[in-house]
Length: 559
Image (cartoon, rainbow, N blue to C red; front, side):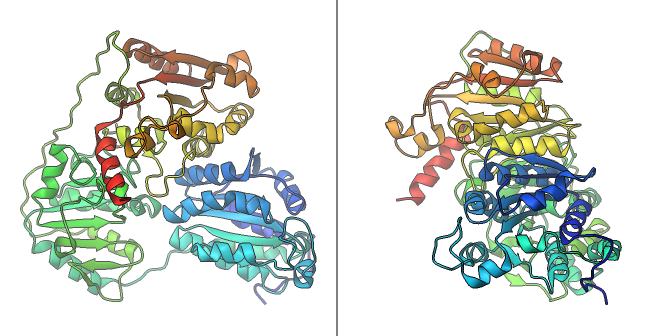
């Protein structure tokens, strides 16, 4: 009987779980060892097709897995019960908020210990073992505690859930199940878990197509689900066939080809550049695809459209001008239909107004504006920019990316310190690309422990660390001169060696002027096999224009 657990060939439940993880694309597994997961870790380290990448702490592991999944489409990390998983729950919450497919595997006490309510360590000493599982469920994370009778079916159910929804999940693996033998032939059935379903969506599509046909000046705005479900090529074809302009939001930026002729910019509500705003202002229909309209990517909810002129196409639902479409709606199927759709519209050819002026430097002190433009010019087709929430994200999100370049931040969850470990995870996911990190010194101090991992794993990112005397994003919201927005002054030049780097594994460069930054960037491009850490010194009150405007909206929200 399929799914039945049998004693055969010394093939363990752990092996099956890892075969599923490997098939889904996670060849590197992050996490921290603990006594409830050590036996399971043996099954990882004894394999030739998986790499164990141990982290300095569980929070960093969850961030790193998130960054990895944004490149490979899936990631896994391992923690121990209670203390480990609670350290990681912030990062996993970011993955649920931003729709990133990550699996956390938690090593837990045996089923007997849990059923008996024994007073073991890493608990509250109150005989209750389901608190942490309930916490994850409360956050909307699919949570499963494996049991001996249904473990295979439970693993399969979680795998299909992640594959179909692109959302994170959480598996509790009691130590008594780690070495439980199962039928090795089950491995042959793993590919069948990931077969795409063909769903007839003709009625829904006809509704959507008819509505767009009745418009005169449609525009497409894309969000993060476009990347998660890999549907940009469908949207690109739809746009090309019908001359419809395309914009993206900061939440989802850089996962599409911004060099595409019909791409006209990144939209951020009324604070967007004028050339971007005009497309939305003049549109009679906004086709919103795979997007969440959050405050930080809509200029504090200043978007120039409402449900009366919006067609919303998301993974979970769709509506046309505020009314739900028919029940046969399926997101990926609709995107496929749209790719071949020829509308009755007659729209003019889109003229590219992108500013491609070369950045010219002087010996002037560095400013945020110059830095943002310089990073745009520095970025090549083989780079992935990872921007920490704050000056980095708001300054860089509006910059146009060259063909092949990628970009991401965490504008919805916005957890400080996320970008550095996420950048390393992204670099591990694809070592043929080079990650470019832009972060503030305040953010980096939260997760700098992973600098040692970067050298251990021989990673070569370019790290721009903006030193502007504290939490600048918080200063412009409230407390510009308050000491609670200050951070300790670190000597970043000493950091690489303190975290184990050899002289030939890194370069540290400090830049305080425009010329120094351009020279540092040139050197970073040459030193492809090194981690290059560039300390970028800027004024405390120097902020990107879009951040200043958004911060005002944030401050108004908090009144």
